Amino acid sequence: MASVAFHLFNQYRSERRAKLFEGSAGFGPGEQRRDFVSVADVVQVNLHFLDHPQHTGIFNVGTGRAQTFNQVASAVVNTLRDAGGERPIELAQMQTEALIEYTPFPAGLKDKYQSYTQADISRLRRAGYSVPFLSVEQGVERYVKWLLES
Image: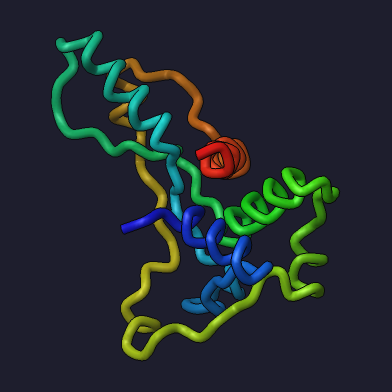
C-alpha cells in the first residue's frame, strides 16, 4: 500500500485538495492518530542493529508519538505551496478554503477503523537505540521534496 503522504501528494497536485476521513470513535475530522514513521528512520534502526548484533529480538519501530492525519495533510499542502512559491498556511485556513476535504468512511469500515495507534518503543530504547525520530512535519517535507525531484 502507498503511504498516506503519497496519496495526499497526488490528490493535492491533481485536485488542489487533500481528502481525509470524517471523524470517528470520538476523534474529529482528520484527527485520527497514527504513529507515522519515516522510511529513513526505519533504515537507521536496521543499520543500528546491523552494527550491534548482540541485540536481537522483535522491536516496535515507530516514533513513539501519535500524530494526526490533519498534520500529515498540512505538511503535504504546505510543502507543495512552498514549492510553488506560496506561503504556508494554518490548518484552519486549509479547511476554510477546502484545501482539505473530509469524506465519509466507506461502508463497513467505520466500525472497524483503528482511530489511534502509537508504538511502544521502550524495548527499542532499552536496546540502545537513542536517535530521535523525525516528526510528521519533517518526514513529510523531505518525502514531498523527494517526490517533486523524482
